[in-house]
Length: 443
Image (cartoon, helix red, strand yellow):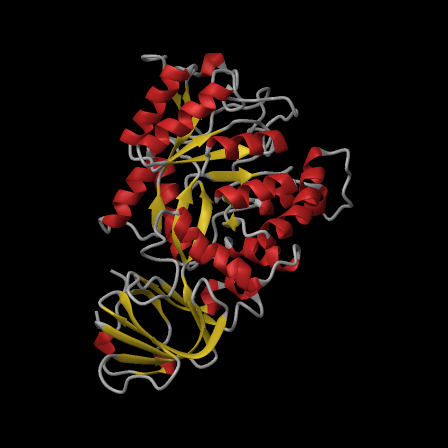
């Protein structure tokens, strides 16, 4: 690998500031060594002229289920008709192969970080090990636990004749779920999930967004919720929560939950609390649209909970952005209608710009700097700053002008650089090449 790469004449999005043009970025030994607006260095290294192209940090997916494949109704969230629990749809080895394929798809879509929102079979830790050891290609993965839930919750689907996993020391594990009751066993379950490699603990305090929904339903007692957060934070881990109602959102923020998923019915009070506490927010709005009337090309019917949720998000998400809430894209990819496919993750970014009216530069910040911070990697990656790891993509065009170009990585991602190494390199025609052997290739 050439130890010095010089990108010149770049349109630069560094992950935090706005667009800069005519910029030179030098990568040495896998890190950002120099950023200049003037004349580029004249000697040494491989020089690549990016005139007309954009250089930006690799992206993030903040809600990740790599093993999901065609998850959807009537199975998902339906106690009456469901024949399986999440994480038991296929044998563990098949789920692992699906997760590995999704990891590679994400990387070649320009995604450098995925932050898990739960898995079965400790697959997150295994995928991270496989990437770190070079067995598979993929982005950095921040591992999550199974869902830590209580008996009879929305994911404990009442299929008692299909749950062979016995209760052991107060804990029952099955698929994506750790099923426990009471503070002592909740503490034990959280600690065990951490021992299996989880950096994030996932909980389901209330229903909605894929589960049967009532405004009074709750999945954890207040003391159980506090126990999860306290136990995780004592071990320097984070907690993320599947929440939909205003009351549950505010309760989670108050007790210190770090990441809130969905938040279908957030309001201005929730937004103010998120901004004040520094809570990360993952809207997962793409699937919210797909399952409501708007996703079917029909007028909204406000008698339907999904339509009400979509209408509320259209109003509240731009307000959350203006208030400075730390928003990160990500969704239930692998669900029906939302496959793990090249460029599919950027469909969500395009939606936020074109349907929510959020500035593209803000959405780029969500998927770069904010995503790295949520992945516990903000000091290392997610922005183009001197000293940081060179996790970069070169885009044919300007995503600030048309963020939709990111949905076609085959044509529009001309280079993908991970840890300073080219995973994809289609830049030969635009550079003053020194030697063909200087180009890194995929092993």
